[in-house]
Image 1 (cartoon, protein in one colour):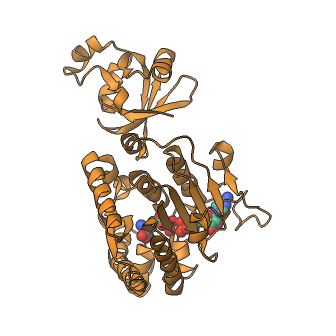
Image 2: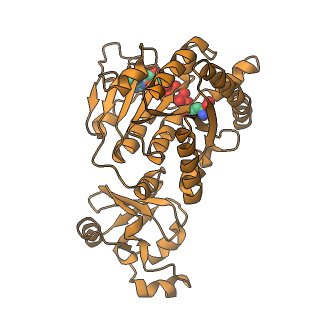
Image 3: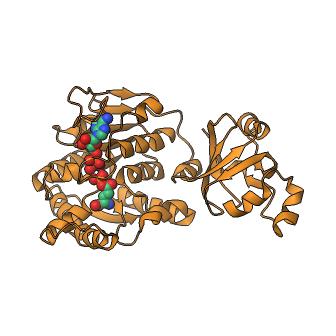
Length: 363
Ligand SMILES: Nc1ncnc2c1ncn2[C@@H]1O[C@H](COP(=O)(O)OP(=O)(O)O)[C@@H](O)[C@H]1O
Ligand SMILES: N[C@@H](CCC(=O)OP(=O)(O)O)C(=O)O
């Protein structure tokens, strides 16, 4: 079994202002135990910013982008050194892989990252992933490590994504503000009622709170990987989650494993929306057709050629995602046109399909 494990800042600090090394050693012990049981583990770790803040003696939190990038650059080294030292106790070698949104968007970089992870796993080396915070600015970032871990789970075609955090799982409301909230052991479908449970943006150290964990669960389960959100301080949390024990909240995988290319298409937070007419929506759904400009009624957001866009039926339902062959500015000018009229409207032509059927994933 291939497991992606995500450790949040909240887990790695145990709620303090420092890396909690005793807790980290226990987590590394569990990773080593999984590996020696024949499983493959990929670690997605947070806490570089926190580790940098600790290493520099807790400077005042200005939290400008430049300051955060400095802290991440300092802390990433500290973090890796800590993992490498702890892993050595168990005879485990580690590798650092820093990724950012562009690595998921560009197919060559995506495939390279996948090869690197495969090579690590084939050699028994533990890949340790974080976002490349030192170089990525807000627009270029995945932005939070819950989502990053879901992208990694897709990339690596993982059998399970385990997100360890400081909450015991997904509760009926934020347990910090609602003491009467109760644990939801299983979520079989992520609908509006599930989104409504996510409270604010998590702890002051973490990013995103439960919202980004639900988002991660949606991305991974849609591509066929089940997700467990569980408490990092519970004894043997990782081993129990991997053994299929009931711990935390389990998000059931929706449908079958998608092929690698389709996972790649879903491996992006798509901001662009393309609104279809009824004929196009049913041609896509029932005949697996490509999307032509004639069936497009509207375009929302800004995107480039090659980006993933979300396709909506007139009912407002999202029916598919796919790679667009026209950037938003051009697509707006060919809405509703027959393919033969594209050239005259734009002065050039990038083919009759707005989204080719090979680049389309029906939801
Ligand atoms: N419905 C909910 N169930 C559980 N936790 C929730 C919920 N809504 C918000 N939270 C908050 O999300 C926090 C975990 O997110 P975060 O602080 O970002 O941790 P991490 O560093 O592990 O990513 C919890 O401490 C909890 O207060
Ligand atoms: N990449 C950042 C962590 C970003 C993040 O999502 O943090 P968290 O919510 O603690 O998982 C860092 O290493 O500090």
